[in-house]
Length: 336
Image 1: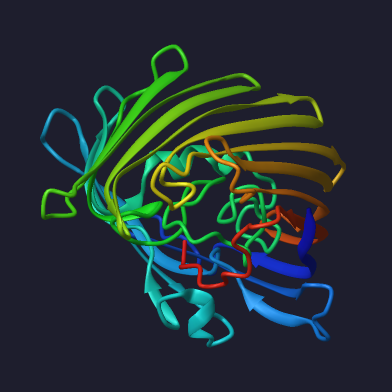
Image 2 (image 1 turned 180 degrees about the vertical axis):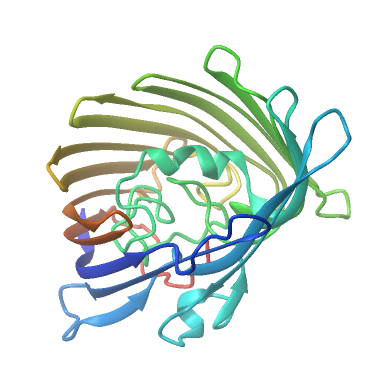
C-alpha cells in the first residue's frame, strides 16, 4: 500500500442554535462549523475550511383536524463560511433539507421534498468525526477530500444533494412509529425517465443498543444503471464507552464501476472522560470480484471537548493508505 492522504484537524468551533426559539410558531435553527486543516504531508500551510454542518433554517409544525396529525415543515440553507464554491460543491449557498409533511405518534411521519434518505440518516450515530475533515464517508473507509469517483459514497450515508445522493430531491419518505424499539423507513425518489430511486431500511434502538439494516436502489448513477448498496451495522453504548461498526455490500454504487463490487467496513470506538470524548475509527475497502487493487485502509484518532452545552472544540489526525491502483485525490465532493 502507499500512503496518499494525511489530514490534521487543528481546531473547530460549533455553535447552535444561532437564534432564540420562539414560544409559538416557526423555530429558527442554525450552526456554524469552521476548522483549520492540513491535508497531505507535502502541504506547506494550514487551510481554513467550513463544514457541511454550517446551516441556517426554519422548522415548525401546525395542528390539523386530520386524525390528530400535525403538519410539519422545514427549510434549510447551507453556506460556505470561506466563500469557496469548491468546498460547498454548489456555490456559496446551497439547499439543505427542505420539505413538508404530516406526522403523528400513531401513524408515523410522511414527508416530501429535498431530504436525507434513511440510508444516510442511520449511520450518523456510527462515526464520531462526522462532518469533519476526518469523517469516514465519501472515500468509503477514508476521509473527506479523498473521495472515490462513485456518485454514492459510504459511512454516514452518501455524498451530495442529488437524485442519486444521500440527500435526494423529488423524494417522498415515510418513517413508521417505533414499536418495541423497531421502526421501518422507506423513500422513493422521482428521478424521471424510468430511473427512479428506492430505499428501505429498519432499525432497532433500545437502551444502549442500536442495530440497523438498509438497502438502496438507484435507477441512474452517472453512467451506471440500477446501482445498489446494502449495509448492516450497529452501535453499543456502555457507560462512558461506545463501540460501533458498519459493513456495506456493493452493487456497483460504491465502486462506481460496473460489476466493481467494492465492499467496505468501518468501526469506531469512543471513551468519554468528563467533558472530553476520545475517539478512534478504522476503515477498510476492497474489490471482491477482481484483482483491481482499488481499495484502501484508514484510521482517525482525535478528541472533542465540550466548551458549553452547544459549543465544541476538537482536534485529530487521520491517514488513508491506498492500494496500488486506488483512485485518490478526487476533491470534487458535493455538499452533504
